[in-house]
Length: 157
Image 1 (tube, rainbow, N blue to C red):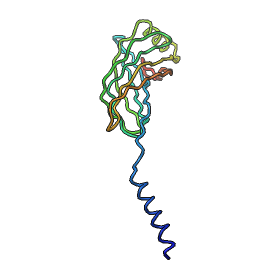
Image 2: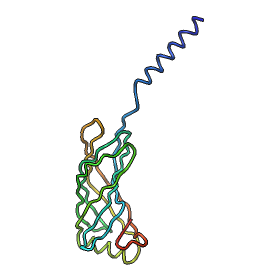
Image 3: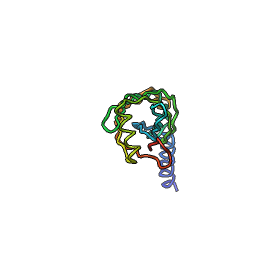
Image 4: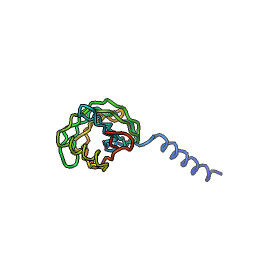
C-alpha cells in the first residue's frame, strides 16, 4: 500500500503546482481596418474603424495614427484617441471623421459611380495598453479593399 501512496502524492503535488500558474498572458499585435466608409454631403468621410485585439488579455486602445491611401492616392491621416477597451481576442469599432484629399475623393466617387471595389492601405501606429501592463506602440500595415454597399448610396464596406 505504501508503494501506491508516493506516486499518488507526487501526482497531487504536480497537479496543484500546475493549477497555480493560471492562464498565459499573451500580448499579440492588434490590427486596424476599415469596416465601413461613408461619404458625407460635405465631402468628408465617416470611417468605421475596426480595432482587433488578438491578445489573451483585455487591451485599451489609446491612440491611432494611420496614413490612408485609396486607389494609390494619399487620402491623408486618420487620427483618433478612442480610449476603447477591447476584450481578449475580440474587436470593436470606433467612428472617425476624416477630410480626404481631392484625389482620394475622386477615386472613391469613381468607385461608387461604377459599382466597383476600391483598394485602400493603412500605415502607421496604434498605441494600446494591455491589462495590468504599460502602454505599447504597435506598427500597422494593412491592405484591403472596400466595395459599394447595395442599397446604401455613398457607403463602401
